Image (tube, rainbow, N blue to C red; front, side, top):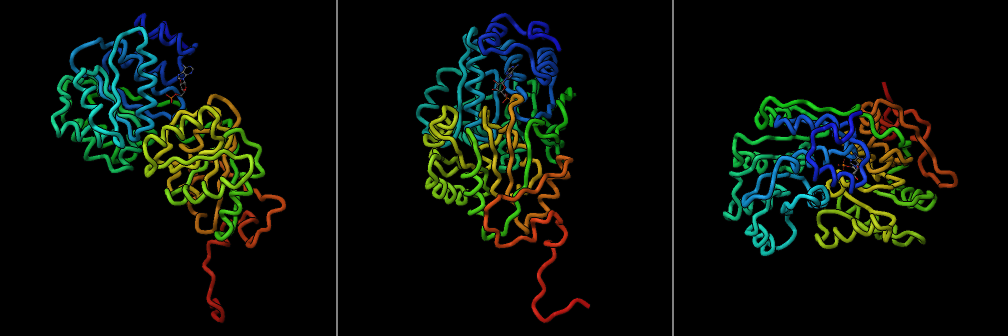
Length: 398
Ligand code: AMP
């Protein structure tokens, strides 16, 4: 593995890397940094937690200098991710005076307009708010030299494709584009073909394999006992910090109210209907230990760099197997041990099979001792039987 010094980064950036405490580049950094420094486009597939942010930030900061027009634009799907990238960019430009600016929705325009007038060198934005500013004539992207499209699959999932295309269109064609997506289905490949010029492909590790230090388990249960089982799991599990993923905001709110009643828990919630200032507080509090449980929807939590999560619980089996991998990416980061528990009901057996196929391993079915199960057919670990619909009484199979 090369050292950071071998990669061609400039002095101030190397000093900032030291300050950040990074000793050696991660594989994606070792691959992507020299390519980006050469000025080539990159299409990168990488799990979260692999050091992707530094992989694109360090070469860009090496290459740009203070100017009176924005030179780098980073698009992120969520406010939290944008804020996280801003924090890292500020850290990496510690010895190089760059104006890094964050533009996302959920907050007022006044402060952002003022900051735009102060000439940002780097803009980190969510697509919707950036487009608003573009339409109001507050921002001109014609000086952009580096365009980073991060977490592209999630941006597309969130319906940002038309916005993203319009933004790309307004950046000059001689720009360099760095494109990162954990998955590369057809629509994303098409966007990449359109947005990138002769990109170098950087793919790190087995895209499908979730962190190897995570142990997985399914907890089968009847639908009517899903909440009860989840609360029991929370009660019985010795955890330092736990993330619980729900499919909907309403589920997150309902579960939060129930978990609040469990002694010893300090829960909070994270989803897009929660005010931005409270979302920031929730995340900050989860990071500093004020909260030890965060109940979140996928969209709010994707890609967040939260270290030291010991347990991830999926309230439902994710509909997209990719989401399972993203969620459990929160735990087992940096070689720590982590557990990922998923509650499984009969209607989710197909999703469960898809997850097992995607991660290419059989996930153990577990039962909680002392839990009064109403329905046990799922627990025998034979997924075929419960898939059949119950026949109305009196009708026999011919
Ligand atoms: P990311 O994939 O960009 O979200 O990064 C995940 C975590 O790894 C962040 O907390 C980074 O600060 C950290 N990190 C990134 N690169 C390195 C490195 N070379 N050495 C140690 N930690 C790193």
